[in-house]
Length: 637
Image (cartoon, rainbow, N blue to C red; front, side, top):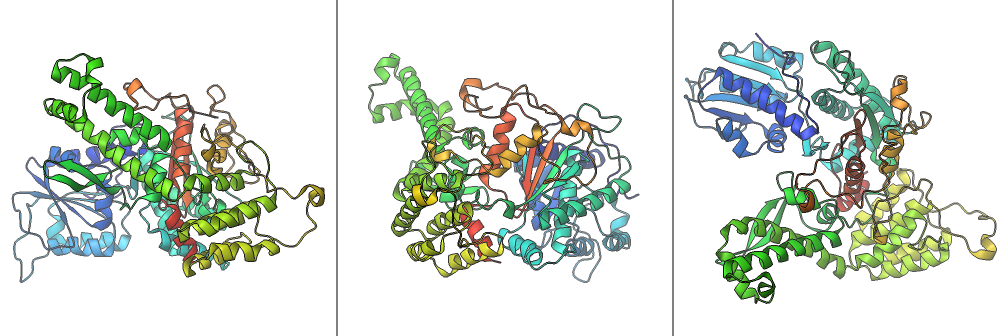
């Protein structure tokens, strides 16, 4: 009667991208399955966590197509709808299961059920035996059940090939690293929760991955072993589940899952990024994907909430581009629409339309309502990008970023290694002029991390100039706890330093950032790791595998296409290639999970490598982090 482990055979489809896979599974395994057994309206009942899972994958319009006209929270009082069947999509928690049982248990306050006598129940993750038995014991519910499935979709699809586990960043950081830094070797309940959710990601992808991790990472090692144990248990309970690379699915090999820890690279989240998505999340107030923008209406200027997500095609096209290119693209498209279509509206030649006043153009466009939606979207992003640029100029971020880039890469924009003394002078000067406390901390932390600490003789100068607030001062102290000494041990220095002046530390692994802008020379460590994985050069001493990997895992998958730069390649949504299809994916999937937070430069690196023709890369984390939230995370230890 109960299809608890979702072992029912479902139609196999070749779908690329995590978000389309989740959408496809929800459509077939939840809505289509329910619609086959109930021909009237459905009511979707959710809890807080499951609501976020489904709302990131399916909008209200798609729900209505599936005859779902009402979405209700299980924690709130609800009116009866006896002609509609309830479709419960819940987290497998004691609270949600208790509320489910309450819905179908007669009481003094309610003798009749709230809904029709056909009930569908789906859980985001596996039910414990205890909670399963609680459901079985509720006879009024059991006799009405038409579906009871564990879907294994316990994560948020942030983008087409990106996910997070919907965990609050400060809580994640303290729970992950306090225990690890105190020498706790056994997995915590929090690490079990991470591994459980990560199992649902790979289960949804139909991937039984080779598991790799950084050998000197306590958190990464524990999570890799814990995930391996839990995934074996998942396979044992789901006999009909299949995976890429098994005997019946040989079109691509088994994926590789690389588990990393945020403290493996504390530099990337701190550096100022000037790509559109990174700048928006760094500089503007946002709540998840929601941002407030100014719009023009007949009543004047008004505030409007906008969602920057996969449903906004223009955002998808522009988010990985440098802010200067974004503004140029937007300006060009607005000008092209205005010039060409005002000419049509006024029955003038295009050359004559270019000389029209703004008032004339505005009046002409009112006669072309079919362009209003396009122009509204273009104007919205022009407003957002200009807000970013206003802050960029006000805070003199170009000057700050040049110092950050030089420290992080070990080279200036001319490829030379500056003297330490000169850089200390520059950093001190900038710290004294920066108004924002978090920005001062970021610059000082970048110096400390990239240079292996401050010289004792420079410490007082730089810390005084930074004038840190208590939270940032605590974060600076905690860098030491994370393995980044704030003060260098006294040494005799390198040969020749006495004569020529000691040079700043050069970066060990240098990879092309793919940007033509000098303010974006730095590329995250993750990009270097991804390239080495694709080319079979990621060493097993530093990044071992839980089990020995076959030879196919060592082969180069992209030698014929290259991944060093994608500057000349068009975006898959760009105007010049509207029907452009991304280069076919070569080789097995790569899945990367960063415990403790993924930053937007790392997300962009994965997208660039895929656009260059590499294999599909699925990147995820416990949460997505911004520079400001990362500083709070460090201070929380």
